[in-house]
Image (cartoon, rainbow, N blue to C red; front, side):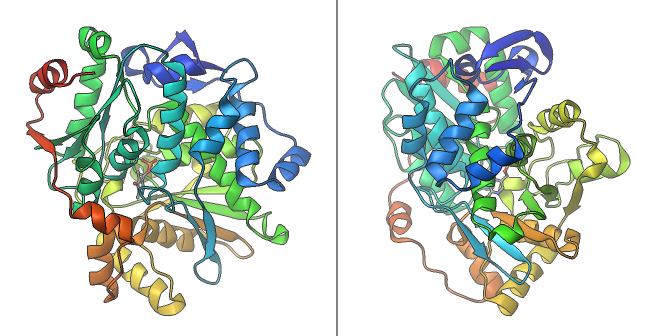
Length: 429
Ligand SMILES: *Cc1c(COP(=O)(O)O)cnc(C)c1O
């Protein structure tokens, strides 16, 4: 598989190199220039397979025959948990991607990436530096915990992630280092970018980003879009609409790669009040506002870093941006929708899925089958879910135990010099 830097097409790398490097020159994202689609017959055949076997074939097709001889083993090992397409109301299903170890869809990408990376780094050392608005950090921490020769530094914005998310990041210890930044998520993301621009730091600690910037995470996520359609009855497979709750737009990029591979579906972009993309699609002007805090906090991102990949993919496939349906939902509407779904269908959602369900419902036409992505377990947003629905949602037991452990974290300003000296002096491999 050859990947090209979207900001400098002279930089071309293999899949392994792109996974190791994370991001290219001038902070350019790596992406493919061509995608060979499956034929309709091949797609049908794939839909008849079980999740792991199908995912092995899809990823082998994307990555090619010449790399990652152990890909099939990695896929089987990474995707060792359940995913379910659950009926939510009359016209819609929730693709429940939150049944993995940290109860978020990011487990798919993080577990795949951890195994790919540890298989390709050989004897070199490696430090994962990641900025999280909540779930990425937890998934990355869990996926890399106790992987030899790999340190993980997880930065998160103070006061903007849930106590449970913080526990999942900051109670592991060992090779997992939690750093609370006294600034919003975008500043954490800027620190990651600055770190990657610092050649000496990059070299010294073997810097790697496990953010949705990393191509391996995106590729892993392609697989569950096929699974969603495979779990539908055959007669419902022709008019599928996916609504994706978007933050950094990695998840929807993966869905669009599945579409480029031949999966028949329409895609709907669902945002919260951080609506840079919906406003862009409406006006043609890219005008990020200040990030605002919402109850769907993993989507509190005003400069989504995967957007250039969405545009590159559209260009590659000859799709028009005007083909996307989209919407943005404020907190009050999100809560109303959570109550409505619960009252009318007994289906419990957390805020991210509820945003996607609302935009989906507004977009769905007669005869279409809607699938919204359940990106987090409702229990991960227990406080909000309980308050909104007037229930007392039980926490899965493993999580309850984690919440009782003491936090091990470093608190820092959004100051690169401080971060750098911490990484160079305080962390040992
Ligand atoms: C990360 C996350 C999102 C946003 O996904 P992107 O790939 O960043 O667009 C949505 N919901 C939840 C619960 C998340 O953790």
